[in-house]
Image 1 (cartoon, one colour):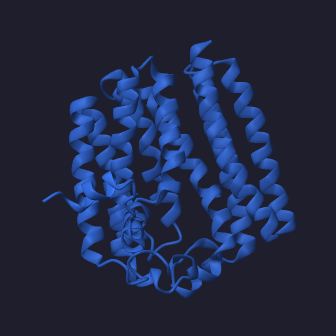
Image 2 (cartoon, helix red, strand yellow; image 1 turned 30 degrees about the horizontal axis):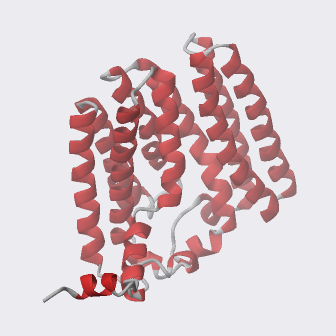
Image 3 (cartoon, one colour; image 1 turned 180 degrees about the vertical axis):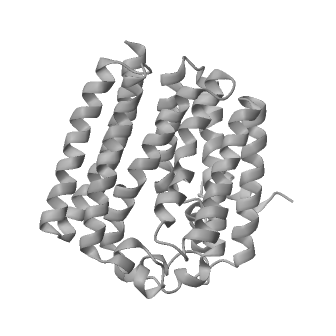
Length: 304
C-alpha cells in the first residue's frame, strides 16, 4: 500500500507538521541558546581570519564545532539550573521549567552535542582546537554554572572566561596549534564580559534576587556596580590596546580600539552618573557592537 505521505503528494496536498512537533523542535533549539551563540561564533570567525587565510570548509567546520560545544554547554546549563529557572520571570518559559521537556533530555542533548563537537573539531581542524572548545565547555558548566553562579559575586568575572575560548578555538584551527597571539582576543573578551553582563544584570536584578543568585547589583547595590562597570571598562580598553604595544596588531586596529574604547568609557561614566535602566540598556547594547566591530578591526588590520 502506498504510504500516506506518497498519497498526500500525489493528491497535491501539503503534509502539515503538528504544533506539538514544532514546539518540540523549538524547545530543542532553545536549549542551545542560539542568540548567545551569535557573538561567540563571530569572535571565532574573525579570529580565524585575523590568524591567517582559512579555507571556507575549515571555517564552516570550526563554526559548526564551536556551535555544538556552546550548545552543549547551554543545554546542560538548562538542566542544572532548572530549579532557579522556575523562580525567574525571564526563564520560566524555558523548556524544562515550563514542563514541556523532561530534565534528562536536556542533559543527554548537552552531552551528545559536546561529544560531537570534540570529534568534529579534532578531525576537521586539530586536537588543540578541540581541546580548547572542550575547556570552554568545562569552564562554563563546571566553574560558572555549578560552582560560582550561586555562590559568589565573582561569578561573572571568573566565569566569564568561558566566553573567551571561542576566538582561541578559531585561532588554533587556522595555525594548527596554540599561538601566543590568540591570548589577546581571549583577554579582551574576558575583560569585556564584566561591564557587558553587569549592565544586563541591572535590568534583571529582580529575577536574580528572587532566585537568590548573588549577582553584583543584588549583593553590593547599584552604586557599587556602576563603579565596577567603569573600572572594568577601563581594564577592557587597556587590554584592547595591548596587542598594539606588543606588535601583534597595527594602526588600523589601534584607531578602532581607541575610538570604540572611548565610547565604552563614556557610556560607563554616563551610567555611573545617571543610574537609570535606559543607560544600562544602552551600555549593554553598545558593548555588543563594541566587541563585534573591534574583532572586525582585527581582521581588517591583519589583511591590509
